[in-house]
Amino acid sequence: MTDEELAKLIASDTLGLLAVRPRRSVTDSAGGRVTERFGVILRFVEQHGAPPSRLAEDLDERKLYENLAAIRRQPAWVAMLQPHDEYGLLTAEPPIVGAVTEQAPTGAPAPSGARHAPVSTAQVSVEDILDDPLLSSDPGGVRSLFTLKHVAPRTEPAQPDYVAQRRPCPDFAAFQARFEACQADLSTGRRRLLPFAKQQRIETGKFFTLRGVLLLIASVEAPATRKAAVRRDRRPASNPRVRCIFENGTESDMLERSLDASLYKDGRRVTELPEDLLKGLLVTDDDVEAGHIYVLRSLSTRPEIAGVPNLYKIGLARKSIEGRIRNAASEPTYLLAPVALIATYKIFNANLPKVERLLHRFFDSATVKVQVRDAAGTFTTPKEWFSVPLEIIDEAVHLLISGEIVGYQYNSDAQRIESRDSIEVGED
Image (cartoon, rainbow, N blue to C red; front, side, top):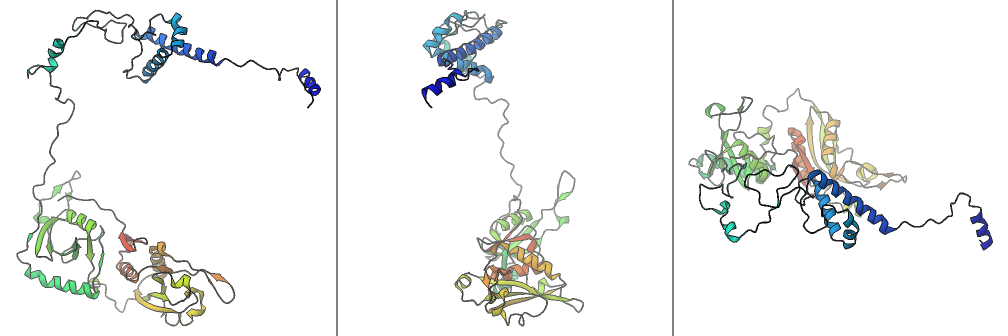
């Protein structure tokens, strides 16, 4: 744009849009704000009869004090506001409006217009300080500085009337054979150690482990022989004494809730023998076989499949699985490779689809998705393949058969089955 064109543009500016306005002075703007703030402080003094205090409970008053302190630190502001300082607020120690400067008599009321007590100009000597009643050793004088007020005294927590202790078991010989049989069952696999959960009832004859020591529930105190605690709803609280016999020859009579808490924290439960578990639930002619759960291991040599640890297919079938897996190498369901049948479990009187969904949901976090391509070039991602140790699968199936699986979940990171329930830690 030439100078002539620019001159024509400026001449045609009838609205004054191109007119240069003088910049507002920063000093004037700052001075106006300071004057306004000082005016607020003056109105505060007129209303309350005293300048704002740094120790005031009101937040607005403390802000006014900070504003006044900031003004005092700036000589230019002090000089500017000096004509308006009718109360002498700009000095280091401003006087209190309406306050007396003499020592007020003890118990005399403060002036009606003042918010703070009058300031005394009298000198205080060391003797005056030492003669202060607060420093008197006379117990009949003023209340001690160390006497707490409105504070509840510390009380020692209530101690139980009786605390269970481990002691030698006088009749341990009567239980020794049962401990030996239980250890033999654990070594052969007839019994297993499972996580302890809150819903497991502590009953006579059951085995548990506590801190690695096998224990037997010898007896549970009958309700009629114990003094029941009474709740607010007037119902007796069920927390009986439990006689626990330990494998090391000791015994204890812990409260049921205390034993429950200890087992949940550092214990395991021992499964019952199959014949004991199936008492009253034995298969009869009226029961209908619904099918069976099967566990397959892939024999594929492909690195992306063979490299997956503990890779198993968990499924359910209404009929035998042997005939279905003959052609596994040509079926994408079996990863287009031969498989080995590892284990089968018969299921009676059950809805197979629901059982299958429950079991697959239980191991959902360990699902393995491997994509395979069949002879026609179609890519498929088979389901029902999981990376789970075989002993964990066996444990889950037994929980499923006993109906306890709903109280547990599988932790794929730790590769263990854990209880879903939380427990209240009781005290003995």
